[in-house]
Length: 154
Image 1: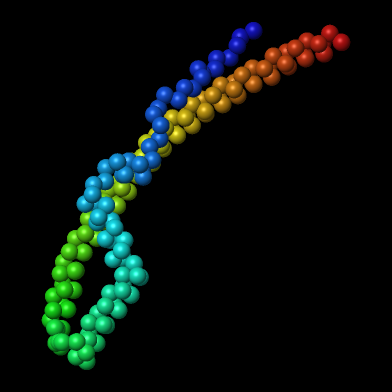
Image 2: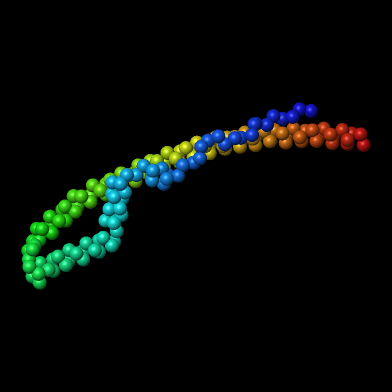
């Protein structure tokens, strides 16, 4: 009686799966955190509403002259302030987007590593199932032989 060969037991010898959030958190600098914070605040409805209210107050105060005209029509100072704001916030938003693209690349790489590990484990499972199928087939043959010899004796 031959025993069918089974593959050796699988040992998980790979390292733990990394969390993309933890990897990014370890690498982030103060400037990147500041850029993310600014992009988050500037890209919100609160900012849009607040800035709209501030600009409306600016225009009303300068048109009605309730307070001394510091920026008469056509509001050149307001245009300068808005241009400066745009000149500084646009690059910060781009920095935040670039960092998020880097985070996406890290996450894609971690996903790739997980897929490789899963592929290896699936192959091992399939090899084990194939060995089990062979063993079950051998057992069926042995049962047929044993049952066949008993049926012939009766």
